[in-house]
Length: 343
Ligand SMILES: [Zn+2]
Ligand SMILES: [Zn+2]
Image 1 (cartoon, helix red, strand yellow):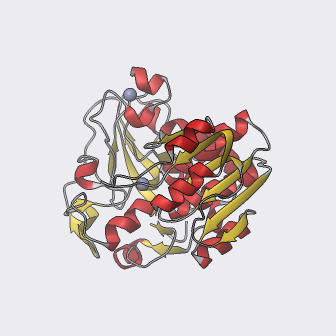
Image 2 (cartoon, rainbow, N blue to C red):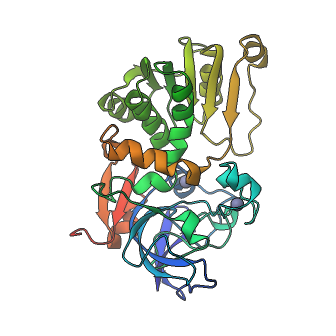
């Protein structure tokens, strides 16, 4: 089968590889039909990094059609359209049962599609077939009436955004929200749009990128243009999607007492200072870490299915399958690759 391969930063190519096969009764083979770029793809395609050495199959946000199921799989059938979580998880271990599916105890730590050695050898989304273990737990049906292209990021960036605002606004309806935008570009925008959809009292979106500020405004947030100041607000809920230590410090200092900040941006190998005295004094909570995407995919699909949040506003380009090697190298917040544009 054909598989899009990350050769090195700035170079992708189609390669012929053996197709995966079902290896156990609980597995499925799926055929990706829509693939989105993750915020991390842009980072690894833009510059060399010791974490991302090719060759490896790329792509980890995808909607697929079920092609074949093992004899124990009853929740999905061939032809069903499903969201495939980018993290592999079993659904049955102690952590999975607590909803901590990003830290599943059954699979090797950080098992993920499309991220090379960082995630293990599980294949990538820009392939003709992908093997899915624990298929009954992993695969989530795309709801009727929801276009696969709309929810292409439901594998990763959408639930990553949801966890930054959804639980906090459920606990405190109408709370105020600040999103500091930046390198986790789509996650920050999704977080701002979801906070608006979830009824936040006010949603401010801080960034220096004019394109992202405009998208935030279209999602109903209040755009705030400029580099991160020492402090804004105060807000009950803040989100750091900046990837900038000054942005993170701003998100933390801008909390009101007992507020909660979630960091979705990744600081690879950096020692980043935190304003710990102000955090202690304000009794604030800071959460960071990989998202537990399988747990939150149904929340995201329900919000979008109800027409309350439109992630397609963030999508910069929708391109055909053959154009993926060039299109993924173009700058843009979110690119979606479609196998069959007519479908
Ligand atoms: Zn990702
Ligand atoms: Zn597990």
